[in-house]
Image 1 (cartoon, helix red, strand yellow):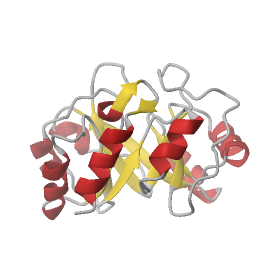
Image 2 (tube, helix red, strand yellow):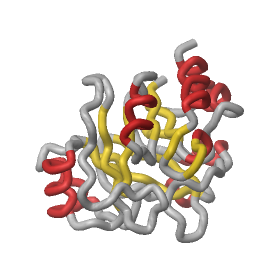
Image 3 (spheres, rainbow, N blue to C red):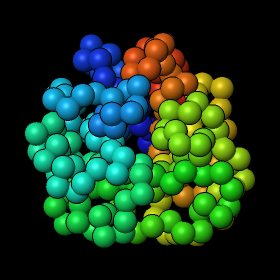
Amino acid sequence: MKWKVCGMRDLGNVEDVAAFEPDFMGFIWAPKSPRYVGEDFIIPDLPTNIKAVGVFVDAFVEKIAEMAKRSGFEWVQLHGQESANDILKLKSLGLKVIKAISVNNENDLLDCVGEPDLFLLDTKKGEQVGGTGITFDWTIMKAYKKSIPFILAGGLGEENVAEAISLSAQFPIYALDFNSKLESMPGFKNIEKVKNISKIIDR
């Protein structure tokens, strides 16, 4: 099972988490997020097997492309109301695209927009975008009918990662996304928790 640690910001913490070799690390360029990295943030050098992901909410395609070149990521995660056309434009610019879907009930999975490289299923909680620390009802995933694999997010931590991994036998789960459940504070991951997650995933 592949895994992603999202909401990274502190450079020393990035280095410490990278030592456990998650497949993806996410960096958030959404000013309303408590994990916002800031306009001028440059992603530090990561091991070649870790893919950096820039996370955006309703940003202009041109802005995302500019940030990708300047800040150092080839994967982009879209957490807003981005269109199928936005996804196509970003892919035409050579970026890999993850489109997040906020999930509360089965209806939320009936109209997954566009053809990204991956979808990401996250918990819907009002206007909050990601980092809720809450799982959604995983039985809802039976309503997912797209052929595109997805990343499972929302409230994943040490207590439920094994169950989440087991669900890959039933659903096209490409990776697991960890954020707030691994944190000591917003944007700073507890390394012991990261270590424990890596051990469970590598079993």
